[in-house]
Image (cartoon, rainbow, N blue to C red):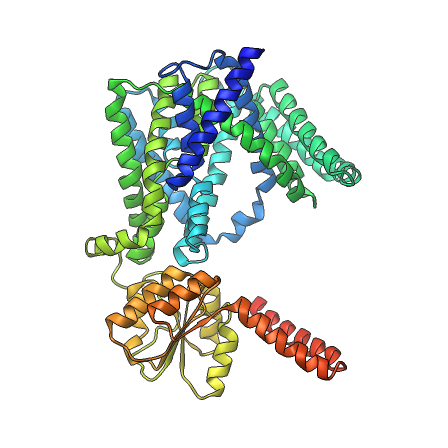
Length: 567
């Protein structure tokens, strides 16, 4: 027991130390955990004395990962993605898997391992990409929305693949016979039916009672997860499918966010063990170097080219396709889970898992920087990207493409502060050109006869189409500091002598935009406090106004949001 305690202590200490280094290098923690496992494994220090013990702990991590995936999985979100995201996601997965399969087969692998590896290479990491886009404040940009949509489609496909493959172990062979497959399907329908009935008639009542105690809520959630995992194993499935269904059964409960918050820390600990375990199994051989390099280049270069080609055929501009393509240039944590499941089922070898893990290390490391510096890379590469863009009829053209206009105000971002600003400018007799990346907003504005353009403000082509050189004023309600700085740079490039009003969400960004030449920076938090202070002074003079102001405010909000939900 003392030796096992030392093993676990070493894993935690080394993973924490490398995690700190990863943070300083702005790299995902997954890399730190895998490297920690490699250092502690037999290839280097050989410190882990009982790999079976580590493997058992890592199984808890995967079970909890899929339990939380089930809890967070919203089937309605797939419907809300829209036809474009679903088609782009499916086309990307199919194209990448097909090309990847041909490449992997060229290295002499058998069909089943080649299929596993090819499918694993199609998935990008939702956790890593969303975190990086969030740090750049790009989640609400056009390419950010498309990226999230494609990632959600990938996650649904990944879960479907895990469910299907999980049932294969019921037969004990790589590919089940027709009769065995029918039995697998019947058992699968049985456990899913049981899960549905429990979520509908039993779990709501039970968890309503248990929710009075936060500790009991967490304990009961874990107990339910393990019950379903044991049931799945009893039916010949893996613990992964049972854990996922357990989470899915609890997803509709009003307490699911509380459960997620309490289980997440426990999951993070065991997931650390899982990635350390993967790292400890890494084998670096000369024969594997060429496949690792080729597949890494395929993910880093081939995957973005595939995405850009698909998006270009669908009608998106080269900038949007390029930035979305960069976000797909890495291997997902689901890819590693898929390979680990394949190893447990006997479908792939430890060498195959090492191959995908090494590709994951390389691609995650490099793609993190590619995403971070995507705009600069686009500006360097833009002369060579026109081949990925259709000349006419692109998907990003607005419903009311403006003709040559002059003497107008250009407003970037209608959905935040823009609606009030447009109303005020129109009262002042100003002509306003509205630029927004939300197609429903543009469609609504076009229906009302507003001059509008669909696109991203940081796109140089969109800026040219706006006629900035002929405008009298530029206003941006978009809080992205990088986009606003790029806009100021374009204004300086054209040597425009017109007022530029921008928006910031932090004091640091506000100072930076003023230093870059903004005429005025809209700082919503400060303006809100200023406005409320003015209201307090007025109410202090006349306390009876509070009810009147309340009713007026409520009426304005109802009219505002009623008009937004109508489109």
